[in-house]
Image (cartoon, rainbow, N blue to C red; front, side, top):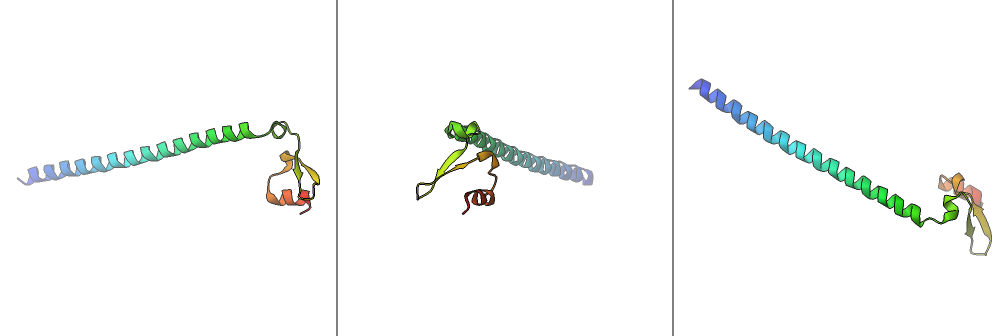
Length: 92
């Protein structure tokens, strides 16, 4: 009888382990799906943003900033990579 009890305990432990591993695998799969769909959404967002940009920005022509006094200042977008650079170039 003792042997049958041990076999039954091992089976129940295997069933619990299998159930736990199945649940873990399902959660990992959901996490990967969420990451995948977030990356797809980011990709399409970047495509929409690129299509919305003026052609002069895409073809390395400077964008023109007009201040409240009507002064125009060209901004070379390939040189701008932070607010500090932007502020230094515009003498703010």
